[in-house]
Length: 320
Image (cartoon, rainbow, N blue to C red):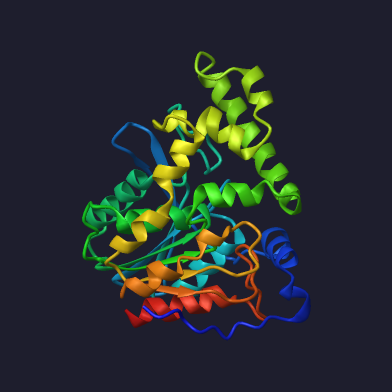
């Protein structure tokens, strides 16, 4: 499809991508919603926790929300999206990836940017156990957005009940995004991610000391080294580069047949040039790309309680 025009023009201070990213990630308050947790057991005996919130009346529509790296279902960008859709006659399922719901998962593996098998099991669970839903929207942020796009473009058929996909601040090229994250301007972000991931790796060491030792964890002081040590090998890839190559959603975009919206800000410091899939969008009638000049990474501040990407997501979902 043609590239979408954008009207997004935030207040002056939010034109700075870093300010927008930090404010929205650390200072934006989540929505006050009541979430009901459901634990599902996966085919490999591990578990995933789903946090549900509901519309005021019964509905046939549901949105599945996918968080980003080291996120969870209580992050502001998740609960705000859930509330907006709840208020517009959608139930919402906020999916906590393996090990992200406050309890370590059972297996050595956890989650990664290409773990579409987990998303596929969640969708199947919803269709099997909650047959009232015949209109499913899936919205993913950052790492979760890459997972969503890969899922939609893979050869395995997407159920007809999945009506649309919405991906926000997506690192479509994982290696390109990793190289951006290594830049000095992003050092504060990467240090924060590394600290959180080190904590997760220490938990894995306690459960699987024969597979992961503390000295190797201490040496893994960058995102690339963590992916090379753990994320890749724990999920069946040769190394970090193999993981990035096989899990990047960019190569799957041409095959997407479900109406899909991507919103990536041009001043997102996490994204490389190849994370803006202009050619892919122009060649695919089901792929819509919006590239606002501002927004940072999962930022997109607007006055009031609803951010630009949230109103755009609802508008897109109701148009399909």
